[in-house]
Length: 95
Image 1 (cartoon, rainbow, N blue to C red):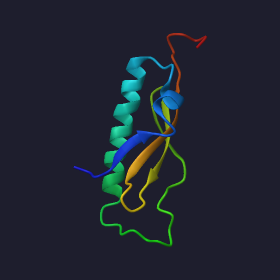
Image 2: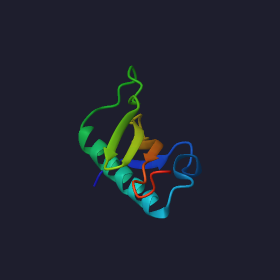
Image 3: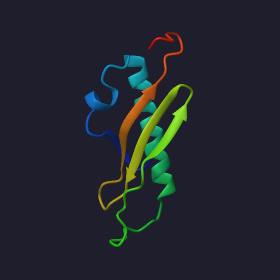
Image 4: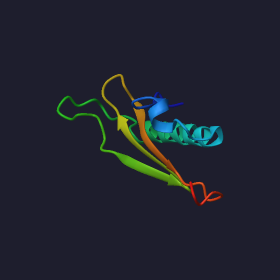
């Protein structure tokens, strides 16, 4: 099990507020997988004070869902920060 976790930044209301519950659950499942992947990707990497420890903004897409996030690997943090989400509801082309 990874010591990486995830959270919304700035908060859930600003990132996934207004989305259907099923979409929020998908976002949270993706965020958990991203945290697990970050934990594997950063195994054995020591903290380097000369490096910020925070990645640039990255994105992950799955079907009609896109999640923008960054990895905060500073000492003691090890958190994937979910910054923004875009979901296209193909059942409702007006959405």
